[in-house]
Every structure is written in structure tokens, then in C-alpha cells.
Length: 66
Image 1 (spheres, rainbow, N blue to C red):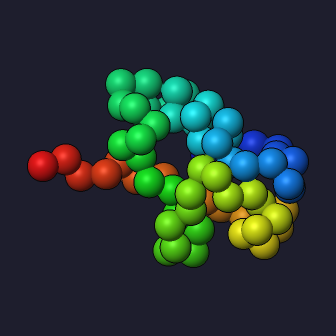
Image 2: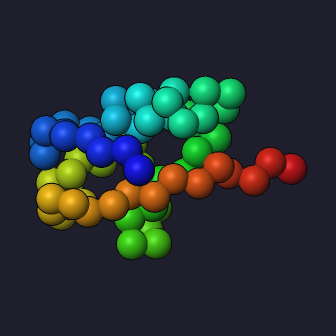
């Protein structure tokens, strides 16, 4: 588990990129998909737009290739 502190009005792009580099260094961030409560989260979205609260979890999955 990795925790990030983010500005609620800034896109999640940087957090997603940093996370990808830490956990999936061999994969481009574009091959990862991020989900909040089963719904796809785009890097351009902000915590405010998503209604994120402290301790909410965004899950990450590698997009299947093929």
C-alpha cells in the first residue's frame, strides 16, 4: 500500500505517474488503469471531482495486453 497526499483541486496525473514508477517501473503509465469503487478514474480528474475523502483507496490494475 502506498499513500499520497494530494491537493484536492489538482489532477491526479502526478500521483499516478509516481505510483507507476514505484510499483510498475517496467510498464508505461498508459498501460495502467486506476479505479475508485470499481469506477475508472482518469489522471485528469481531481480528488474534489471524485469526492475523495481521507483514507479512500484508488486501486491500480495493469491493462491486459493482446
